[in-house]
Image 1 (tube, rainbow over the protein chains, first blue to last red):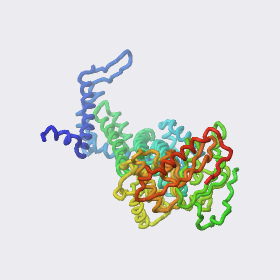
Image 2 (spheres, each protein chain N blue to C red):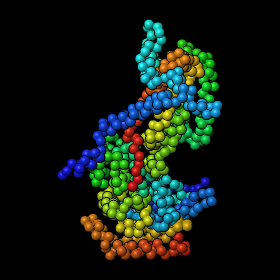
Image 3 (tube, chains in turn purple, yellow):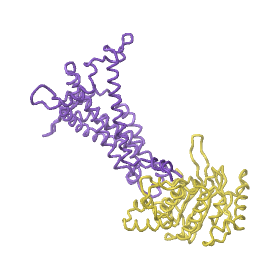
Image 4 (cartoon, chains in turn brown, purple):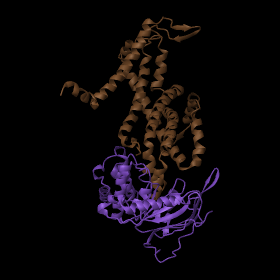
Length: 306
Length: 287
């Protein structure tokens, strides 16, 4: 037997860790390509950008408008301000991101409870589906920016005994408002996904709605629910960032996004710190759902008919 | 509102404990309301299936054979007439788990292993996990899938999936099996093997079977009696008794037996006579 005969059999399949490494490799490569395109345009493009007629279709390439990628990265490790006790930028961003992530998690959880609850009601009563679903869809057409200050002012009036409404709670509510929508829709589709053959089978077993829900509808909804939960997580992060800005909440990444952008004329690379931070935040939120998906992997199996 | 009369024990066999008849269908009509008006799916159906008897329902599409099976399973209710299963109403029999059911698709839950699928009805009815595991082992052994207990449905062939579905339908030791073209989606080789296995299982369990099919050889090979139905409106054309001597040792040899071919001829003739023109006596059982 020659080496050529052996080669295809060996090459056919890489081992699992190797494949994982390749996937990450492509991910890193993608980031490098974007950085390269950025630098290439910055090097070749005119300083005043590309202007067609009156409209600038490509940005200026000055250091002010487009800092070098390496400047953005090195800026992360410099102190955030000139004060002697200042933290490095990355730490400041990371702390703010953690605050935002915490609020987003609360908003997401509220969104999961509300969204799944609505889906259950809509699945149980067809009439409820007709009554609620249009409102659920309509709810998402309300602009968040208009809506956020109202929630905040309502919240400031809430005071029950020792409990006092905090600003972050308003932000979490706004995040849940964005998060519940994909979850409600995804969960409803998932709960309605079992075929007639399966629901009839449960009927022949003489079991009611509740057991059918537990043993059939909820497990069957997992493949629909996972992408919905991921969308909901991403929406929650976006919702928190926007709500932080529009309610003026301190401490989160939304706040420093605005704050550093204001300082960009003096320190253009600094503004990119919180932008990178929010990207990592979104990835972390979506990644947490991916972990959930790995735990529930057996529920993602689909039926293959003979 | 349609009337569904309570079963009246008209003969001595219909005692509450164990009736000699697995299924008694009397004067059943079934109409469906559709947009284009009412559709008469079944008319004047009368049929008795004895305990342990294997009865096939055969006929062209639209003859109502599946509908009739669904009425027995209490998945639909008759517009008129009565359906009794072991002397009870169909609905009572369903709640008492007197029958097991298998459809054309295996209908396994994809997220459950083979063992968990077979054990589903037991689990739903609160069997202890020890009883359950013992029964699952027994059933998987019966359908020859003991080595596949921990596999998932998508890792099985169509024939194996269907065997899991049959094992599941037998989980509660029913005395009646309802099967709606369970082998319809299988290739011919697998199909013949499954038929022989089904006969063996029925002999082992002593269950009566109502088997919907549109394959004449399948009906003849499996059945004690073949109910030939015709469409528009769905009715029983003729009931053809089979005179096959079954020998479990040489079950396959039956397929080349003289009596088998006679049976095929008889059913075919019954299917082809009268299907365009309705005969006078509808749904009469001519045993």
